[in-house]
Length: 451
Image 1 (tube, one colour):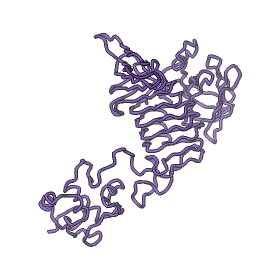
Image 2 (cartoon, one colour; image 1 turned 120 degrees about the horizontal axis):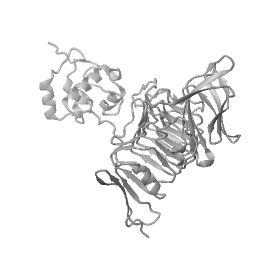
Image 3 (cartoon, rainbow, N blue to C red; image 1 turned 90 degrees about the vertical axis):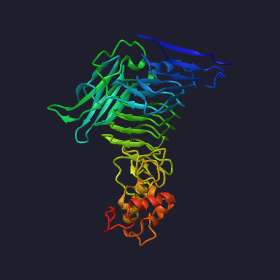
Image 4 (tube, rainbow, N blue to C red; image 1 turned 45 degrees about the vertical axis):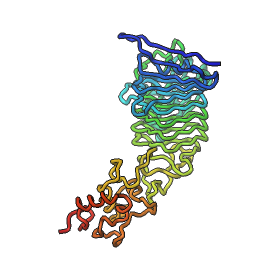
């Protein structure tokens, strides 16, 4: 049985613009249709998600989409190119939130908003804050010395959730009886002693109708914007793959909440409050991700998850370990914050890329030229300390963890065209040109002429 073609169009001011096209002709029912999404007014990606069936693939073409996506069924969401397929959260809620099993999220640039206005409130120990809809938030204990607060989240006098949040961290309290719809995001600014009680000032956003897709009639307080809790969030969601995405300017790049057996790989999370954060999540595998300049921490894990593939881990901009054998992997493991005891056993010394540098291409121009040969001689003279590990690995064309010359070891006066690297990398014609452009003997590694 075939599924008919479905076309969804949006009428723009200057004509009719096709936004979502489902090309399902000839696809057997249950095999999964392919949806093509193009930029347009409204929410074309979310529209495709809502109309798709379990097992479908949604292809999102290049462009900028101002949306906050909720995925509640098993499907694949695939961007054309993560450099050109942009989802802008526009300062409101999680940008991609998945609450289904067996999804794939791939190929997006996800951008939050770092200049949004939050609502603020200061609470005292034991103060009951009625936030509407029967929900109440109460700081049970405020630990000034430990810089943390214990918040209790209840509805109709029954506790829904309870969380200890450290200063500088954020947490979303959700309605677990309503598909985990988020209710309030709390960011702890600080804790301090008051005249009669300890106090905790928080920034908050009440989500209200935004994520529930229902008119609940409450949460009418200050929804003035949000530095999103997550670029990508998996909520009570298992067996998903999140790969090849770039996330920035969010509170958290990728966040897993009570989710397991997921794979996070080849993502870059940079310039967020935190890079990748796992809460009450187990048996997840995280590797080949680049976690760069995230303000509070690059990685956080309350429990035990696998932060490497068994041979390679992730790149952390705050890693300070060494790489004695120049294999691109740090000698010391990277401890993951959060108290769960997780470590990355094989932290990467350089940001991960799926296109490793060509052996011998030492100036990253995509070619092997006499310029590369000149750089190789400097490395042969100065050893691994004369360059960064990635360049040294590219110069080590023989895989011996050395770059040497047939002359005396580390001798800058050795004939440069006979350098083993030069012999291996350049043709006879290039070698002739090389000897014409540069003298064959040098007085120092900076190639000053020895006259």
